[in-house]
Length: 442
Image 1 (cartoon, helix red, strand yellow):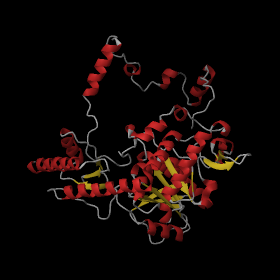
Image 2 (spheres, rainbow, N blue to C red):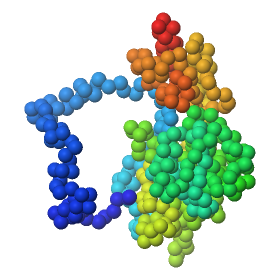
Image 3 (cartoon, rainbow, N blue to C red):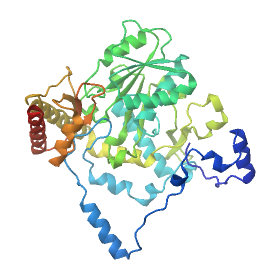
Image 4 (cartoon, rainbow, N blue to C red):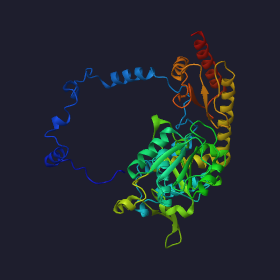
């Protein structure tokens, strides 16, 4: 639920008693009876008060204990890419930082135009007809795309390739479980898809970084009257065919890689675009361009979900806000890079990742278990559990890959972007070699 301007009204004593009665207990103490009494209000062992200078010195000493900006090869959905200085300079302007929902177009033209440019760039990037003003992140965008496909087809079954991110699919299931929509996974698509399938979900590149047969998935889905929903890495589109050219009906992506920092997992912005004929089921809001009475260009909210609470079960989405500031950063980032700049970033990711994979595959005890073409991520089968390998890498000041042993035996998912230098990749290979030698010694 988005933030609103209604005043906060605390529960009255009558409200509390009514809620307690509804769940069958007599008091608030009874509600928390399962929590041990000693743990309910623990006494905080706080140090004595200190002056500002003393406190600042202590915090600086603690901060110095952290490993700052180490070479990191983590991926799996959040990525470290170069962000031009112009992005942070512009989004840091106060008129953008304080912007919220642009209900009154007469005083929100700057914000509305920023969203309109974002939508336009998303359409160009994904090769789709129309894009909305953004979702919360890539996961919520994918979930909303699946709900959208179910509304469009009148069907209640979703099939996703099991190479899609488990975290993305968890969010999809969270969104769909109350609606009795079945979400299934398949290693490969059946030759004939059943007639009750609303959409086929393909992540391209996959969670493991490898390219999927999106063309084939589109043919199979469309032959059954289903839609193809594609989740993509926006940076990969600098060199790969966009979803619109691969037959996708709805395309989504996570915009964190476009001008966003890692920031411990957020904030992000979800990209969602579709074919023109599906625009009426597009969730979120849409900004359109028009002309005022003097013939000047103006921007307005043409489709918005904020008022859809009145429509209840007929609403397309309960998302009533969007990450406008992050969307603006993504738009500035794409505009600053341009078509050639994005292609250069994608090429660097591709070639550096393949250089790293070649170095690692040559090490004793390490293998690349998956066949096919990958973009900037790939899976490595390690000679010992990845958590042990990562501990050895940490001793060398390197953040290793993501442990995917639950999906691939002793599997580690490594990510290499344009920011990794050759010596960092070579140091990673040396660290992995050292971990392999320890494993050989037992």
